[in-house]
Image 1 (cartoon, helix red, strand yellow):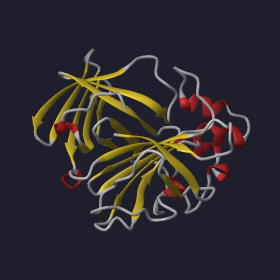
Image 2 (cartoon, rainbow, N blue to C red):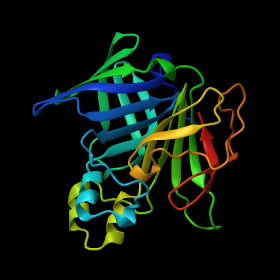
Image 3 (tube, rainbow, N blue to C red):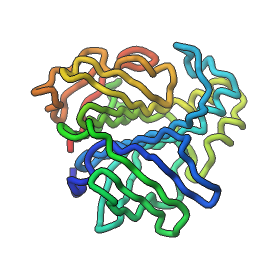
Image 4 (tube, rainbow, N blue to C red):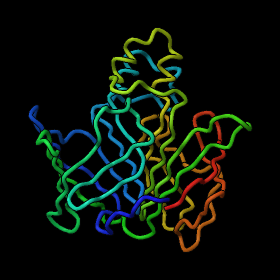
Length: 265
């Protein structure tokens, strides 16, 4: 990868503990930001998201349930830090692409406490680094292995200490600047809603031997409680040591899919 690495102080898993805006404070959204040397994953799940029956697929959700899923957020891509400015360049986004760049003004209140402010003063966020997220951090960009000539889906896999995140793109591109809830509300058929919401952003933990990679939180509720890998990967010293062109079998709602690593940070 050609992007510069971020400062070592940024690497790990950060949990947002506070968001302040003109509309008030938000402490009710579960937000996790994973940062490796160049790549990031961000997941945002409202605490009041409805409980979905186990195994309920996107094609089975009601219109009301689909609208609740549309309130989620998440993205993945590369990160650049220039002084106090942090830029998140998104390649995959659960929501329609924004028309403005994602840039924050950053300040460390302590080694594991990071404060983020909007350049224009519209928000303030407080992030706390999870203690088990240091050590063995690495990021991977993946491409789905499919029929020759077909445009592959893109995915990201980040591992930060005891935590991991997996992000898979949807098949359709969403219009820039649109609102996901409005798009879901306007969808006339269930398959239209599935196409809009079929973007996975999953977060979980792995055990000390890395044999278990359990998804704890996901934009696809049926993924929660399942394992990430169809075939447990072979690791060295409990940490990933995969290289470009290596292939991984990763589970999905439609069965195992094979992914090839296209970039490693």
